[in-house]
Length: 139
Image (cartoon, rainbow, N blue to C red; front, top):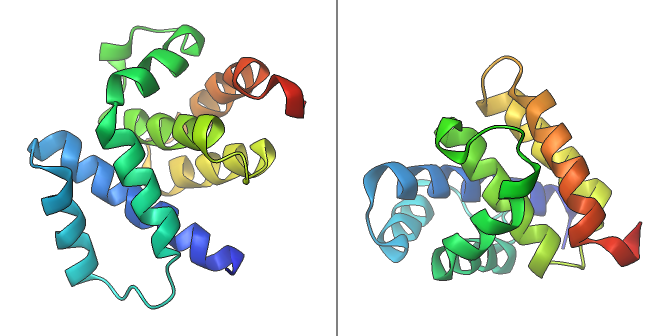
């Protein structure tokens, strides 16, 4: 699978996670909406679906994994920051086929594109701390 296809999967997964968080709808319904309103021909569908299912199945586990590295209260997170952290943390825990440096870099890029002006710095700091524990063997 091409790198660009994974990048596109992350972007659409972030959009789905954001819609899911704000709407409270079932993740399958949100996924269907994303799939039917976007061109999915250049998307790593396995990766996209893996992210959504992995986070929707146990969001508390994902949140607990990044929470110690925030430097602020979780309820102070912007919804897009929360979604980026969930996506990155899921990848760090469950998608070890993706190097941690790629996960962090892609998360920073997502924050620069979709987040507030300085959110990429916050995302970078939190993930840099988290990766020391979530990917000890890779460092």
